[in-house]
Amino acid sequence: MRFDVVTIFPGYFASPLSEALVGKAVDAGLLEIHVVDLREFSDDPHRKVDDEAYGGGPGMVLAAPPVFGAVEALRGEAGAPAPHVVLLSPEGQRFDAEAARALSRRARVVLVCGRYEGIDERTRDAGLFDEEISIGDVVLPGGEAAALVVIEAVSRFVSGVVGDPESVRADSFEDGLLDHPHYTRPREFRGLSVPDVLLSGHHDRIRKWRRERKLARTALRRPDLLAKADLTDKERALLERLARCDESS
Ligand code: JFT
Image: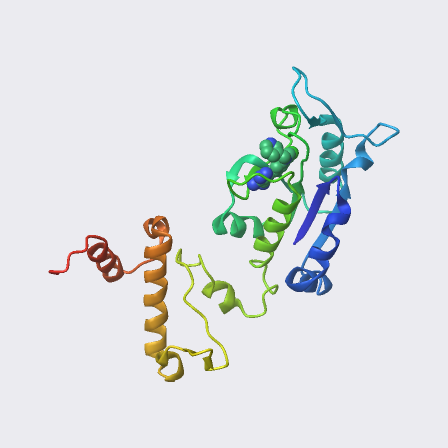
C-alpha cells in the first residue's frame, strides 16, 4: 500500500515513519510512503502558501492554488494507482477502526494536512477530496499528527505489517469491545499478584476469564460501545440484567 502525505512540514514525519512498526513495514516493502512538501506547489518566490481571510478575522488561511497543484500532480502521476484523496480536518467524519480497515483496502491514499485557521473552502467545493476525516473532537494546530494516526492505524490492517494476524484480530475493537487486562513477569510485584487463572494452564478457563473481563470493562468504561459490539445472545442478556441491577434473576 502507498501513502502520499501533503504537508508544509515534511520533516515532521521523518522519525515516526522510519521507526517501529511502520518503519519496518516500509523497509520490508509492504508500505511505500511519500512525503510531499506543499511549498513546492507555491507560485510565490517566498514559497508562501497562506494568506489573509476574506472578510477579516485573526489568523491565515491555507490558499487553494498550492493544494490544487499538489493533489492534481499526485492524481496525474503516471504508472501509480489512482489515489483516494483524504483531507484531515476537524470538520471531517470521525475516524475509527472501521474507517481504518476501509482505507487499508485502497492501493494508494493521499493524506492532505492543513494548517493555519483552515483551508480555502473552494478546495472542497471543487470536489478535490474523496473523503474528509477527523481523528476526534480535539483541536490540533494542523492535520499532521492526525495523518500519522491514520497511517499507523491503517497500516496495522495491511497484510503482513503486523507479524501475527491473530494479534490484529485480538486487539481492541475487532469485536467492538475493549481489551482484557494483560500481565507478564514477575509473578509478584510490590505485593501485587497475577490472577490465578492465567497461571493455571486451563486454556478454556483463560479464554472465558478474558471474555468476561472484556465485557465487564466495556460495560463499566465504555457502555456506548455495547450497542454495536459482537456479543452472543447470552452475553447480551447477562449485560441487560446487570444494567437493570435485577438481582432476582
Ligand atoms: C486542524 C485537526 C484535526 C483533524 C486540519 C487545518 C487547520 C487548525 C485548526 C484548528 C481548529 C479549527 C483549524 C487543522 C485539524 C483534529 C486538521 C487542520 N487546522 N480549525 N484538528 N483537530 N482532530 N483531523 Cl487545515
